[in-house]
Length: 276
Image 1 (cartoon, rainbow, N blue to C red):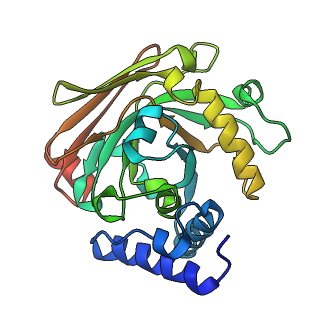
Image 2 (cartoon, rainbow, N blue to C red; image 1 turned 180 degrees about the vertical axis):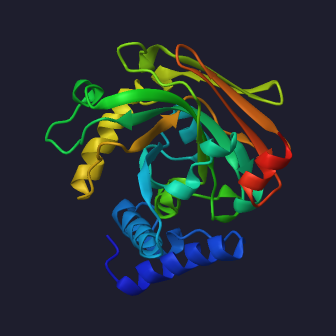
Image 3 (cartoon, rainbow, N blue to C red; image 1 turned 90 degrees about the vertical axis):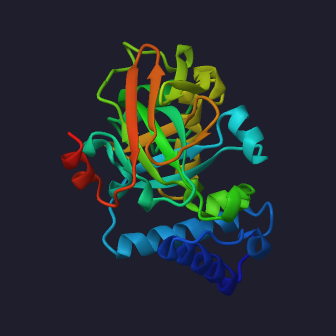
């Protein structure tokens, strides 16, 4: 692992400046190395600490790179995770997504798990985490990258908070006694055109496997998952590039639908008020 704090600070500065100036930056792998995941998480933790110091509130985590299709798109071979903050959740503004807050947005459909219990025990597997899930909901994650042209390796995306952007939760809420994540199928449409499809098995064989991986990994990093947190469990199919003015709808069988309208407005609440 890269231990020089000056290197970590330079990677943090590069990504932080890209977000603040709304100008994508060069990859950070030239600083951290192409495969130094531990160093990349050190950058992510510092960026998270700075956001928390500024008053941000953590709402959960997202798991990335769980779908073989998405891994092929980005040229990586393992999952990663990032931190979700309250200001990333745009569900409460009628699913209107302000593109002005993003740099290079793409959308992917997935299952969100909301936890009813902490996940901080040893030996967590899919069966163990199932009992901790209060309910599942359909979700759209709007991924984004501060790295220019999505030119990322695993190091770049981990450092960049797993390429997190915003997220939308659908209205449906189902306990796992009424919904089997692995058995679901997904279709995602942009303005009525099919742009992505997949199934629960595309997410590490079962979205609950992804949740178990995250629970173990988060615990290893000293920040276990807690009751009440949202976990975006990973894409069920390939992500799709999204432009302003497009409406995306995902159908997740057995669970329901979730819709997001991509707007130009920097203020999603104002946009919702003027379009309803």
